[in-house]
Length: 267
Image 1 (cartoon, one colour):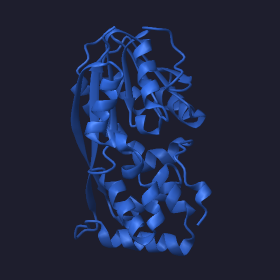
Image 2: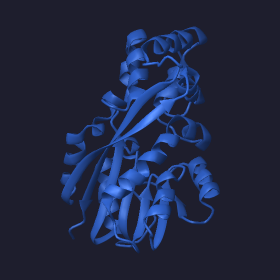
Image 3: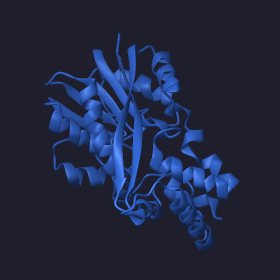
Image 4: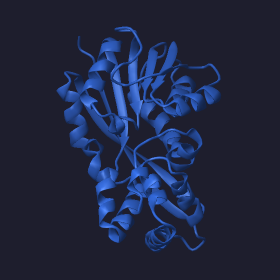
């Protein structure tokens, strides 16, 4: 098995969309409804990816402005094509946001915090660009629990290959747990920290609808699947086919849970 291809790199928009982007688009409006931000605010999406959360902000929140920042050139290109000038997009890092102090009212991050190496520094940087009394909010997949399309994958992969357990996001990303997320936000001096689960249905028409996105190579689980030789990949595919809850018509109904968090900037 060629381990060098197993990584957290997100570089191309279309494979990401098929794998998890289509589900993140459903979480975004529910997260925004929970935040309940008044209209006319200046928004920033950190780790904007292909623009799912940016688009939801523009569609549902009557913002004064929306900006997004992401380190992936491929994602920024996809977002620019999809959002057609509705959002100002920047290529950049969560720990070095290319905006002035107190230049926005709301900073959000959707499904990105796990992939930021220095999460504490990122939250401090988010607070820097947020005005006094502003809001910082985020959500992350519940990898260790109810993000079932990934949970089934890693449980099957770990049974067949003990080394796969080390790549499992549920193990590698402690921030996917409610308690860790609350502790991180409180540790940066943010006030009024609140959390809530957001559950969405992730229906698949049949097993191929579930399996094909793992062949795109984008993200830890697809990268792992594509690092396997053909024999090992077929074994994993067949084990998943056995384990997934499949209805009589071949459809597969799973749940994806994200943990949402929000807090206020006190300075």
